Length: 358
Image (cartoon, rainbow, N blue to C red):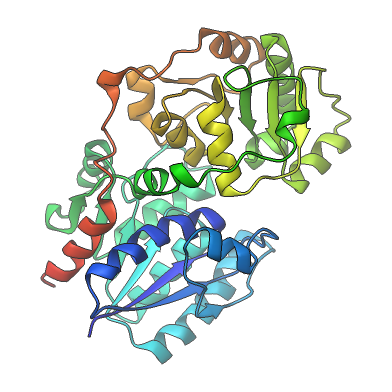
């Protein structure tokens, strides 16, 4: 009986892992142990979160979060190694580009356990981003690399990774978007806002390169204000505290809300006019739901969306942000389908089953 250990550390990774876990229903002989490193403590991840999202609860919760990148990754590496020695899995699955991804991949590689990396080959080509370092190192110790697009496959080949290790499977988040679309939930506070479906811009800001830079944050809020459109901005507590510390006073067209759950986020994405963000995942979700996206960064790992014209890079530039929001370049039907057909989970498991170790 094949045994998999899946390493996750943040709520988006649980949603990605759930795609593959559901696909395991077609492989009843596979046993999976889900490990949550605790990298991101999320108050929304209560029992109801796992029930509503149809996600299995972790078999292990390591409780490792906070601290510097080095300290966090080191402690995760130590605790993950203990789990792997006890479980003796045939494969370790890691997702994306967090410190948990890197720690899981390193722990497995040093124990000579094959590593499968989902979302392999993404590159922003900005080595100042800790996520970029995590992506590159994980890809180079992985045994099997699941690339979401041909561009990500090309990135891996350009770095000398063997073609035999790479498979383009589409994007697991597209699978998730299809699965959860009919489960989307309208936030209870939406009806109290002076806006309506299809009229507002949905915004998210969380990257340290923006939230830790007062000049960047002032430019972002100025750009959102200059658009003149209603802007809904769910805020993580840390971002809210940074805004207060910077003495930024949002304009009257910007509505700050508490963080939202994934099902509420999907509803907001499906019903907005457009999206402005510095998140990697939200850029794709905008595309999945046919919305234009303004990315308030200088680069993106999802370059194909920029090439299609439905994602505009503005950086933290007020004038560019306002203009890009007003341009509102929606996703044309002819541009659909670049992230697969919604069967990535099944393809990943089929590939693991059929992979021949060198």
